[in-house]
Image (tube, rainbow, N blue to C red; front, side, top):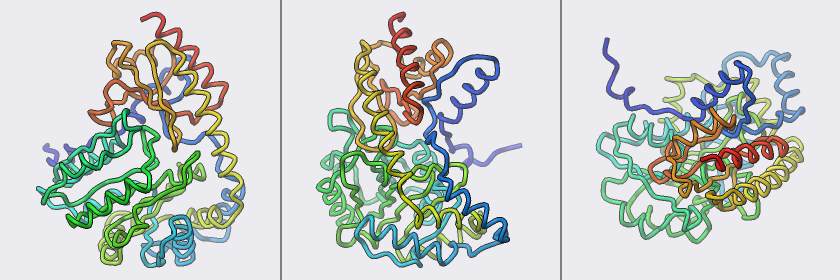
Length: 387
């Protein structure tokens, strides 16, 4: 039996591998602190859960329109337009079961074998995986600690060529917590227009900013027509298991995305969309409370990591990840990932799982309680002392 060459190019997310190993250790009686998975530890707001239950009770369990319920698409268009100060039509919105389909569909709709796709490195590992699956050449754009994990626009200019079909942006960013400012985004926009490059802007953490105002590349002239926005409900509303995301696409791309949806998912669960509608239109206090708690955890974990000899960590400006430099410890980050789990009971991720420029780093998700983070820091400190 022979697998296709395309499917053999698919990678994976180490977060789920580490989570599975951590769960095995827990099942064997080990105490494990989970700082590996990018999942808020807050419950989905009660009003959102109640809306989903009510939708089921009212019989909203059948097929729905492929691109989403009209009332939901309209609510998303309004929300996206207000947050980014742009005009969005409901017809540009495609509701998807999670955010990953937006990545998949955008690449499948645009990419031909031999095209080049520029993506952030370190970055979400699925970017590179899907680029390779689509038959394109992945071109990493280094995000360096020295520049606070932002784009070096001059370097970006040097790697954009006539073969560049797509640029992937992610701000706030996973795994670094870096944020792209307005000035940098404007330069990137001008570059994309000059070279006729389409953008996939992953804005899943758009509501998880600590001090900055959210900036989207779509605010600049000419970019709405060449940008696919990815956003969703998993992070902002702690709805990871609900599988609810959406894309906002240029008019010329919507029909192709709809056909990809028809051929793969048919539609997104209707009762889940009713829950999402309540999330957008209902009280936003749970979002504010979660962000406040994440800010406290951020400050706590960054301070604690910087007090451990051999570890340094910049303050992330968004999302809920601390990307710590561990190069001075003299141990490869992949080995540290394994040993911290096996020997210290702390689950985290090696930076090189996010790309070549992640070597020498560990990613800690602070989507856990202050108490558990404190215990994790204690265990890490003791582990490092024994190296």
